Image (cartoon, rainbow, N blue to C red):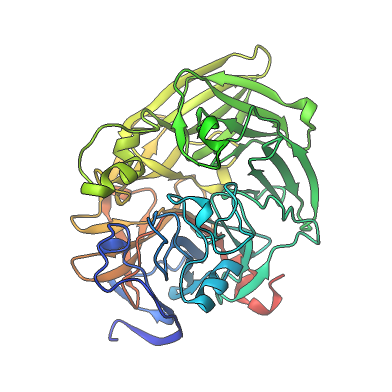
Length: 505
């Protein structure tokens, strides 16, 4: 390939998906890959790689090898981690399947062994499985973070955390937290790392009382805190937030229908007559220390930041006006329309929102921060738990679980700066990478991956975070068109064992 050197195939897997596949989330921009690549010395096809961009961008995604028993849901696919690293004006690319126990078992079987999100658990061919529903496959395909220099992939309905070297992409086995990992319940996607303390904060949830736990892992990788968060029944949380002194968990009125759940049927319903509830607990607090705050009913997939301001906790995230959309519109048609309409940002009516939780009076104040429909927001991680100004979010292709652009929200002025990727080009969650020697909140870069249906190619785009609307300052072509994907993170080079995988712990 003329646009890069040192390209090698390092793995190839057999897919049993049908050749005439018509599934809207296994075709087009969601077409999965079967090849694992290594590509060094990537060459910019546009612009130049910034010399002061130093670190690794990691993106996880669902990338199925095998069909579902009956109905594939786009959250069911096997995890695949994509890595683009930058140092001294050079860049490299790696991608690897996240080789979970479930992935290895199905690969050996040559087909599905566990049902997906849209299928009854009774279809499982194994007596044991994973997830809050139970009897699911732990695909570890939802999220990726970096703790103590090692990438950790996770599953949205709770499972193991899989350790991956952020430089080589080598699998390093399951996280054990020195023998105290809560294997019975697992860990939900979206654990949080506090870069100031080195702690990892997490939650998990289950159909068993107390229905949620909260835990803390210290900078030495020891599970040092694990407490019950009692809920009225099984719930479906997806994210959490934290401040310097508190963790914020949630109880949203979108959960499995309790009557159907008695018959082991898992049908989520939205209950608009119930309030949203936020649980605020000191980061090392006990169950008795939890304080509950009620707010307007909604569902929040993702929070962006939280911090303490006087007597209040300021909590920012994406408020859904329609957590269970009923209206039709653009997107997959026919038999797919009802099943997948809740995935699109416009159908969910997701907008940036702020809650103020008063720790003295117990009152809650809410305000919409933007009228624009966006989600999957990220910030400069150096400003986590502190007052901040900027959120970088994704805009959505109407009717589809696809990202068609970037939006920079200025929370001080209320202004927005946009960049549209263009027709047939779809992005991933961006990550904010402070430049070496950064002196301001937006003094750095946004990094994302795109799937370009026009070129039948994928690219890594690098934007100046201060001038997102100007378009990318650098565009790197990847060895193959990759599947569209979502969650991503950034780790500075100095925190990734300085590119030496032999010292990863």
